[in-house]
Amino acid sequence: MSKLTLISFPTCPYVQRAVIALKEKGVPFDVVYIDLANKPDWFLAISPLGKVPVLKVERDGHEPAIVFESAVILEYLEDTITEKRLHPSDALERAQHRSWIEFGSQVLGDLWRVSAAKDQGELDSASQALAVKFRRLEDTIAGPFFAGSQFSLVDAVFAPAFRQLDALETIVTTGLTADLPKVDAWRKSLAARPSVREAAPADFVELYLHRLRNNDAHVLKTAA
Image (cartoon, rainbow, N blue to C red; front, side, top):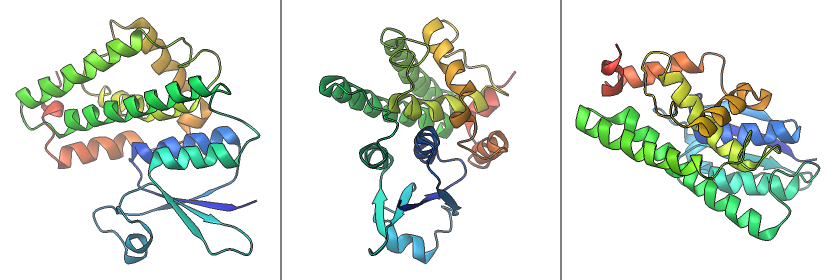
């Protein structure tokens, strides 16, 4: 079996996607954390985009190989660790799931805009974009997970987004899923999943909120 090492940053949601998939598949792997504000030279040498996650794959008789970009890492894991599939067997359903994975990346983009907003106007714009996407999900998900009872890669992709929202809502009431019962139930089902709970450091909430405070995030100023 290949030795897998995931290069990570403690609060990165894209890394959490890969961790969740690895834990769901039940394979051993190592995690190496780096500081994205002070990227080591060895990381820049193996990461063409200078971003995490990066998966280092070590196989007997081969030089270590590098896979980057979270969606690509998920597909690699699905192709090579076949004992537990996280994609549907039907080709059309797989394509649909891949489409919703891209949608999940757009959700993370909106969440980043929420966290990066410097004034109320920027915050309102980002929150509205997020609300529109959540309403679309309300009409799509089957429950308790995205496609029903089986946990999929789509769930692995959305779980880190909801984790950020959970962290934010420890001090701010967003109400973004309050009127969306299916999305809210999905969010809770994901939060209770062992692979999701174990995908980030135990102090994730503190680390995430600390980053927002350091960036003078306007959303924190809206707390009652």
